[in-house]
Image (cartoon, rainbow, N blue to C red; front, top):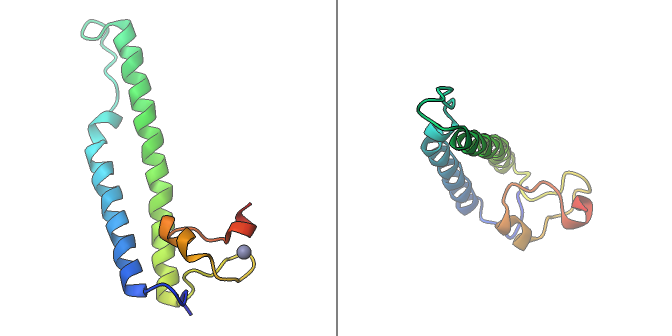
Length: 113
Ligand SMILES: [Zn+2]
């Protein structure tokens, strides 16, 4: 069964909203992740380094979003299967406040430490 203090419909909506937000951010950052022009005449050396750094950061954010979207899908599956909120380590219920803070957590606070 799902967590007794969590409404599965509300939680599904929260997770779907997170998923959408993730997709929107990914879409918006597309241009930042585009390959930096190598033409030195249009961009000075320093600004090119800046551009490469900004690109690297945008790529790191994108990777983080990728991991998060996997975690969101996983949480949605757990809701469907009726396993949501159960610690994957000890099988106890994860604290409601912890799930509200991050609905994708898989372990209770004791097991996560
Ligand atoms: Zn646990």
